[in-house]
Image (cartoon, rainbow, N blue to C red):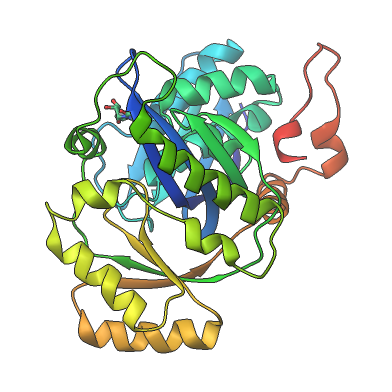
Length: 331
Ligand code: C5P
């Protein structure tokens, strides 16, 4: 049977702000976050052919334990009831354990691409369920851009595009375990909706969202960006606090850790200011990988997906007649 090959992008995300409220009864933590996709991406080559028996193979330039790519492929094929030979070649550029959701975006890339390659859409609600079953950050990458994340991070509300800001990532190569970072926060389980300690966090988060949705002046929302993990992770890895301070001293308007770390990001007024800082920081901290990048809004994110999959906007919107909505995620 003939095979088809595509190369798709799997963009990284930043948490512009990340508030951790309390530990829920299901053991997960209740979050308030603003996600933003960035240009930095992994590349995934996918070769797909219908077959009598299913075989999923993965080559990667980096050894990744428990790779979500294969689990995502198994989930899609089972959902579609299709048998296929699928071969993935993953070129990883997003640092592992860096708080940029590299594993989650690779998994989402498989969820977006495989139904198109199989010519069989999965209803958006179902795709979101599959994504959430693979990991809390996976659903965000079905749409990308800027989004508000609540719950485990899987309850998503699209935000208007945040004006493009030059970004500098500082990747110290210290992998931080997400479950350990959550434990280090020491949040107590609560049974009420909020605890008194949550109120300042929620208030600041509301001001941030208001600033993103109705900005009074460019970038005023940055004043309300916080990452609650910094208080728990910086004492374990003091060099991360030093890097954050260095980004500020080299001119970043805002410097924060992304996710549970260890990547730090700085937002700059201009590309020139960002590139100047990158040169200085490379001298100050030569063991850190400094990566210049930028925000990718939802329109650009979806356009890059349509290009990669050779899908037009109208065919992405088309219904298949079975009550689902085509490949509407990327329309
Ligand atoms: O959902 P995901 O597999 O990415 O989560 C990894 C781990 O991080 C979970 O097992 C849990 O320990 C922790 N986590 C959490 N609260 C969240 C998201 C993740 O406690 N909202």
